Picture 1 (cartoon, helix red, strand yellow):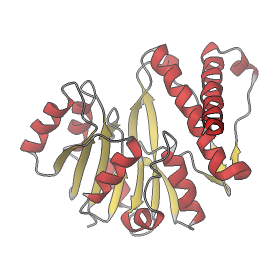
Picture 2 (tube, one colour):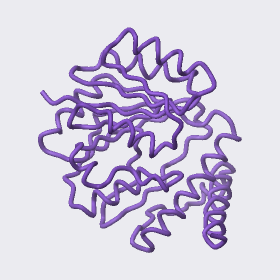
Picture 3 (cartoon, helix red, strand yellow):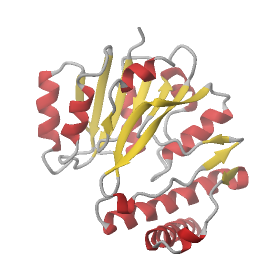
Picture 4 (cartoon, helix red, strand yellow):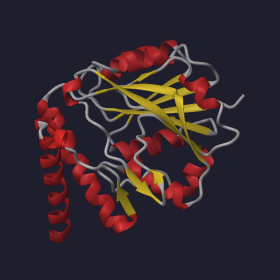
Length: 257
């Protein structure tokens, strides 16, 4: 039976990290959970130390790093041939690892299903980006790569502030990876709780879109058509506004450099 290394990066997730770990503990073995904490200032390290001391398959590392670099570091510590990425504020669904494991002999890249929970006011339809006909916006909150493919691709591009998962997926498609989607591989992800957090997320999403555009040009296609309900939605308008700001600021920063 194939072992799976679950890779998590966190920063100040004391409100959420316990729920994630509790959802991982009963998952089907063999697997390990590698958590890279970017030197949190809250109780996140203490919570991780507590679980790492109790369960030998939970491993905790403190290292100041970006999300992409943290994931690459986690992979460097991985013992198994398959890598499952999940976020620190997510919850793994029942049999998540078992269901992912069903695809390890056939596919190099498996995207699971993410279900939003929390403040649904700030839950919006994901903007899908396609590259060579493949949906590459499969988020790394629920994504599995074979370790061999991940290493061949060079891991996450650490120059990306965000959208590093989309960039990795594009490179995987370009490399001809065997790719599938698993609707039974469920992860529950939390929406932003406040408007401040929502607009910050929208800004960085826009910045990430600029980074992708800078690297890949017009080869990435957006497949989302705005309807009247979108124009009438204040949340949708706000997301576009702050996303545009992030995109423009990215371009301006590039010109200055």
